[in-house]
Length: 335
Ligand code: KG4
Ligand code: ZN
Image (cartoon, rainbow, N blue to C red; front, side, top):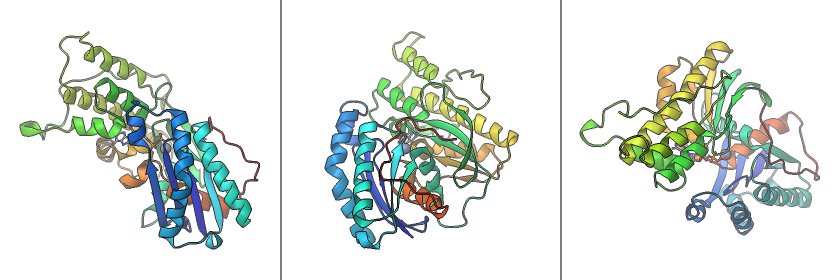
């Protein structure tokens, strides 16, 4: 089964063709990062207008690379939430038009769920249920138990900023640019004679959160702001603050993830979302947990449509379809 998928939930215009949920025939992503970098963050209206410009060339490229014509496709999928309403609407309407003209099954996919399916696009055996999934992106930080395809139980989430959002905001405070995650990771890299040092000298406070699997990152952002303003002694060098911030976020994510695996049945840990690209997070989780850790390759961690096509395949296989009256759901949750 060949699925054409479209993803426009945020600032990436993406289209992909995936066969049987696991084999990528084409995966095209047009990033708007440079455009939004000049504003220091994503401007929703700018994003939707750019999607309008990019969407048709991106789909054409996906068809060309996969050597598929529209008539070779078996279904059309697109992200219908969560995300920016104006951005989601562009992908949704183009997908509907294709489905209508070609009389193809149409299916709307939850963006958070699709991030998890990036792990199905890796060669080798499929992940085995129940899985402990940590979805860490620019808009969400969710911990869920995945009991089967489409079956989720939410354990916890962030009470304020998402992990990626915290990276982006702190990078802005430190003058490191956008997107913040990769910029902080680069700045935090130990250099010179102390390159082997495991932990940064500076330690930032960890938030105390009542829910055993909930997170909070806004206090960390305030702590960095106070350091930058010189309210707590001399302002440390940027690499030191970046390293301390990264360490604090990774520690919170890893500690609660490992606890969740001990208190819930899970056979594997699965990382998903843009922040899964962070190498310290991968490294610390691999060190602290005895369960196998699955992480998508870097290019599939951030927003793309191949993961949407994979997720769609498993839903379609269960007989699920959507009508042409499907609407976007900007506030959609997982589990
Ligand atoms: O999943 P994604 O591409 O978009 C959303 O659905 O939000 O995630 C983007 C987020 C951004 O906040 C970005 O700063 C973060 O992922 N990110 C990272 C890294 N690469 C991207 N955060 C930490 N370390 C990274 N290497
Ligand atoms: Zn995403």
